[in-house]
Length: 142
Image 1 (cartoon, rainbow, N blue to C red):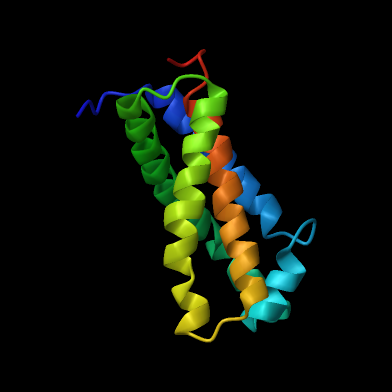
Image 2 (tube, one colour; image 1 turned 30 degrees about the vertical axis):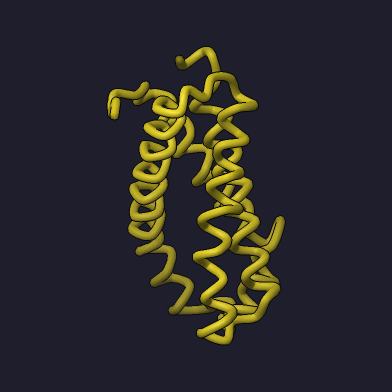
């Protein structure tokens, strides 16, 4: 297995994934519904101030996790010979639908989470992997 990949493409894909997540879980897209379905309340006052001071830690941790996922996706793209953005996007979709969505289904089946919450979360993952795959497999990076 060849582990050498274009690290710039991995970085670009990870940044895109985090930006997508920031929008996906914001009030612009699904943030309000996601909070309601998660049983969370909008922080106010002191809670909001504390959250603002520590939010960078959450974003940093999320970025590192997305970077690891992006690298793993890049290794799969390289070793399957997937070239071109469409091929990368399709491989991302296969992973999102065939692996991540099935794995996340346990939150509905065994943890009693609402199905709508599952749909918000898994659709973010699928779209994220499609975008990351398209970026990584873009001929510009190969």
